[in-house]
Image 1 (cartoon, rainbow, N blue to C red):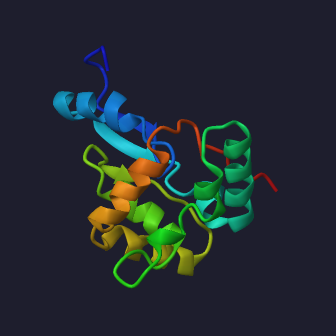
Image 2: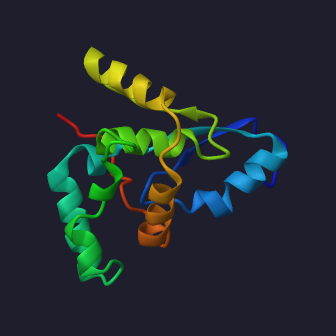
Length: 150
């Protein structure tokens, strides 16, 4: 962003990797650089066993308290909140100031419909967003796993 040559950029951002909120989005917005958002869901929010493994690792590294890791994101799924962790993940990134396009990929037409429905929903409740920030706002690099190779 120190150069005037960029019109768009892809940025990693998700519920457990939010440092772009302070380091990138203010500058991209000020300079009119469009942001394509990647890593919104990946395996960590769509595969429960992946989330459990990541939470164990964060506790072992003393980056997360054991009590938080026991049910880290369960508070997001409720009647006035998200319908699933994937729904929460897409709604979280979709309504972040500085995110212009949310990238997602699937080979399943029903997943495509669900992803679009989530992106079109309103933001997560303010209390849920506050809890996410309090629990995970300090984390960097979580959920940035590459695509699965068959």
